[in-house]
Image (cartoon, rainbow, N blue to C red; front, side):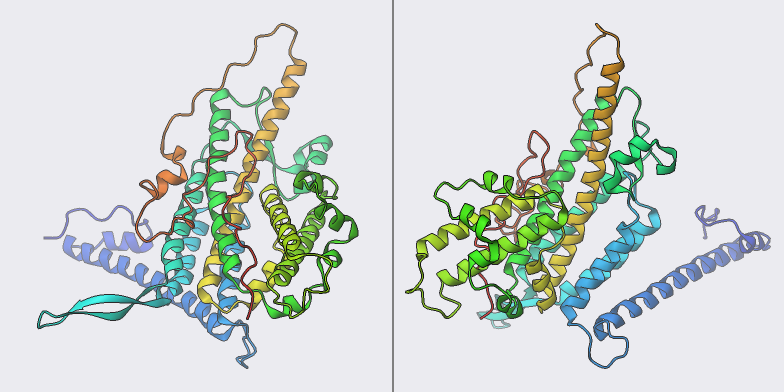
Length: 470
């Protein structure tokens, strides 16, 4: 017997009203099911057309002329993930849930692109029992190990970031206003982020419970940010250094760094903080330029230590031990720059690796982790905007308050709930799940610093740039 009631989730339309006028209930039920099936078919047809378009561009290498002048498959797939993230996350300028249509598009289309990883396999030895009971070892296929461990981790990081944004739904303790409705002083304070709406808090600042909750969300997003940074750095480290980049390097580390920086980094008493304090890091361009020069000097010293440049070291005034020491110091500087300025663009070395990479698995891991790292950094920046606005409001309230007023109450403990789940809780267990390398587990992140600074995992840049093209 058909159900006595019709589905409630179908919208009432002219076709719905015409179905309701049908004489027999079974006929009405069948008509509703037919209408529902037609809607599903239309949606599937639209998805199929989008899939055809996307994978057609991938096969053409983004060359619509079909003349074979397109980019390699790895770079085309990396660009597809990057362009999708830019289209979906580019409008996320507030701490609020992502629009349902954009969230659905992201989950659906990134799933299509990541499905390529299911076809990337490696041969492994497996035991097989024959019909006569004899056990023998044969070669079988399974998904490549780096993809098998890192793709699920990145999918969980992706889901956590979307859940954190959903946690800001219907928050009334802070809000956003357009720049046109703000005073000139408020506009001048945020000239660096002119495209971001200005966040507002109550005149006395956030309530203690809200302030504690916001700080807790910052720590949670910080853990996710570090995990995405770790996977991205490991993936870039595994990519070979292109020959074109090696040919563009200066002849020695002094030519790359300049005389002033070279003297500091080769001094007997070397302090990384003193080194960075002597350099101008007031703009993103200057930070990126320093990072490019340090990375180039690391590769130069590494190649000279391992004699990969084809030149003899007998006539050199710098010993091999000194070069190894200089290389370690430069790597330390790169680590500090990376965790102090996580939002800077990619260096020349990273761009060269991505453009010349031919491994589709590396392209998927690098691009997916990079866009998640960017999203986590943007969420972190928006949370910091709220914290800064709260601090400004509290300082102003203290100045305007009469003498002898009561002190501010202590922040309340943040209750445990779905929004307070840490990265380790989300990944499940004690971090010893099967098939996941210990060194690359994104759950093996340290808790956030007490002062809330963005930190970098200590083990993600080991042996950096050792892998060069043969």
